[in-house]
Length: 331
Image (cartoon, rainbow, N blue to C red; front, top):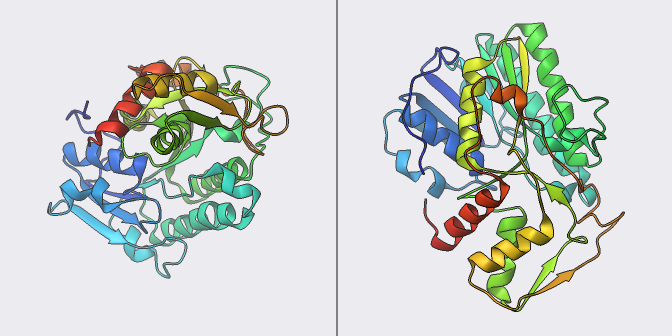
């Protein structure tokens, strides 16, 4: 199901929108939606995890501009930001696990890159809106499940989560200080076509190599929320239309949870495999898949639902759709 054409948001008054990380998984789907709604879209991506294939349908369009650049290293980001009233910041390192062995990666690619972009926004001075994709990992091991946006204190247990929370704080401070609006989306596990990381993609790749045994990190009881990409993009667009304050934060996730053992069974079933032996690594720290893995994540999405959004797929449906997309290599 593709994102359908619809009305242009009043919040996105400018016809020119910058997307950092716009060739990546979520960013490219966001670019699709904006292009289909008639915007002029500028994508900045260093292609370290994104791909030109994700945006190839737009490369010849006069309303689309692709700039291959690393916002961490680009000396003058103001030239990229100039002329845009709205900036959607999705560029980041998506691998949570890398923080345990290379903490500098999350600092540089998430916090430092975020700061560089904010400085460019400050210098240009006419940016009206910044949208930022944060993560459910900012909550850490929340004692309240499902967890709403007002939950505190925020205690991320991974460096990835800490880097996202740092970005949120910087964005909030810059928005109030320099007078632009900011929308922060705390995402659950987003799945769907074009994704190249995460448990569903990993399971498919492992089973392609060995169809008789599947290694599962942890003890299989890790329970989380999974949301299909189309639902995520619709949530982000509605958040833009319905945001009210100077800085607005929305949880984006499904209405349910699913555990890793069940995901493994769904993937094997969708791949048409039988008698697959699940091999659990046992994990660390009480069955986590890795250091910093949140064992129980379920976001309260009632705030966004009160503005008119409803996910069309639950976690199981999202996972089944994703496996089918990976296997067919559609979109």
